Image 1 (cartoon, rainbow, N blue to C red):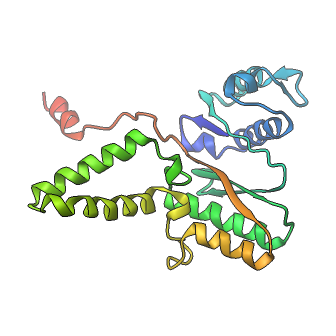
Image 2: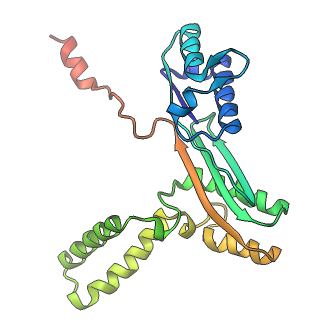
Length: 230
């Protein structure tokens, strides 16, 4: 879950951290899909809903706050692992589907969560990349190849190589593993499955980075100096 405050000072406040933990527990205890549904649920030990408790916390702490988004993964057989980086700046969930209960599966899941935090993949695998995005990337590659003077008969081969490189950069399953760059994530998962004699599938992941996608006001120092000089 991502909760936003206006300042780092409040984000590090014990009351804020306690509220974050409380909201997380509500999500874990209920099959909730979005913030609106979350806000209507009871906040434990208060007699208030989550939305009402948020309002209470805003009044108590004295700064505006908001629950921006949430993710919840339920797995039938397998494990869900997590990793939080930088005092809550980045949070990751990993879903591994498998019948194995071996500790190595959990260890792999934790490593993959750290990888996702660092490598920031945009998609799970190449099948997850929207077709229009792939075509747009190919067209950019085609134009660049033709503009560089490459013969048309080899442009398609160039595009094939470049699009595979693109998938290797943006797709989790095809990324080089940050802990061991000689291995691809997908092959790493398959290798552990082979070692344990079972199927292991990296089914899904969630990566939240605090504030991503939110437009922030940027200081224009030149404009400020000019205004002060008037």
